[in-house]
Length: 171
Image (spheres, rainbow, N blue to C red):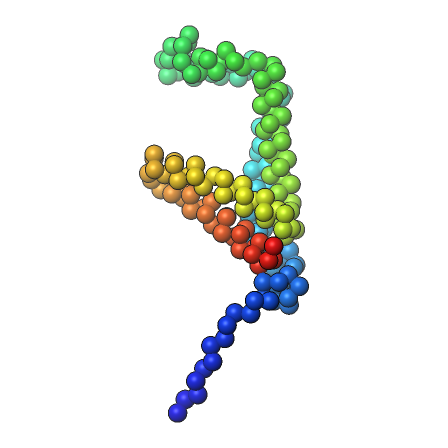
């Protein structure tokens, strides 16, 4: 007769950061490193874009909008692009550059925290990615297809990885 195997229940203390099964070493969290790399790239690109906006100013932007209007044979006096071209000013470009710069710095800060496996960075990333989920679902409903589905799936995975990290720390 074979002995009965006793099923073990999960140990609740396993989720405690001070428990020996939780590894506080940042290198033990490859999922956080992948997300950190993506966030770092997004932050760097945003900073480059903000710098370009600040350096170029409004004149090239207005010219590019007028090229788009001519290319698509739109009414140069009416419509969204014409209104957009009229609203482009030195002040508006500097405000846009400042907002994009702040966005980039925030993503770089989050990337640094995720690379170091900081719990505040997991919270920040989880909340930021979760805020995009309703928009991703809306985009999938309006434009069904594999690109919208892929973006939704990636954001769900990011939320899952970061939420799992938060729960493992038991905060």
